[in-house]
Length: 298
Image 1 (cartoon, rainbow, N blue to C red):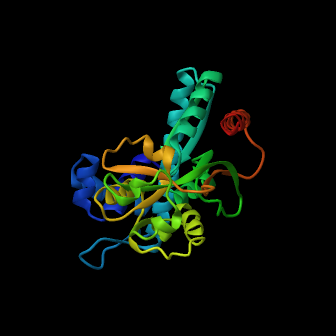
Image 2 (cartoon, one colour):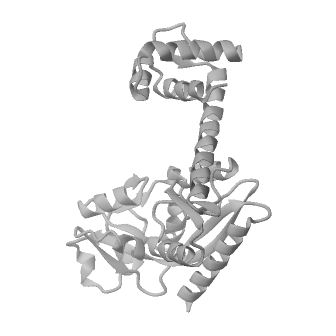
Image 3 (cartoon, rainbow, N blue to C red):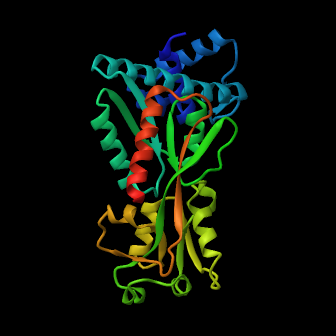
């Protein structure tokens, strides 16, 4: 089967409109329509329900869409790995990080890896926790970093470091009168929180901290990313909670950071990987990870 047919099918299946799919592919509509008929004839299945005006996928089409994405992703990975080998790289690590993580830790780790092993190609993408799990299962990812350890069968989650939780407030706010903010005092103001259905781990860890307070939080909005949370806080909707080192890298003038008083609660970051024997590049990467985190804890 030609990969061209799968690429055409992916465009049509995602757009559910021949004209838009053709425009996305940069070709005329008739070759796309013909390719879909050829694909159905080749597979001897009906991929599209054409009984109504709106194009819909049949169950077989929905299954092929999932498999098509996996196949094309695998081909793309193979192309990248081949090009990397031609450029002198002798191995590849595919790493994903989720939103809200303390980026300085990861930056230090990647810099150390480039210094110690320049022949190893490291590709980094940002993916939500749930997508990291799918990519790990599909062998499209080697390592994930996330704020959740709720992995499923075949995967392992290892706590690798912790970061103190801080209060994020608008640039002009009564809490800025305090060098350290008590949690009970912070919760007297409206709060913007991670959405519980975002499946990032951020909500669960912060909710556990908030439950230690005698004051029930007044949540004005739930968000799915750190960026949206900071935007709402900067606009004065409420306060937020986040890892200070992550927020500081953004250098936003509309927000300020205050540490929590007392022994500050901490958020745990987890390394996600497939269960089983580690590849040699992964072993060396994790050795550097432990060295970097041990030095940070000193």
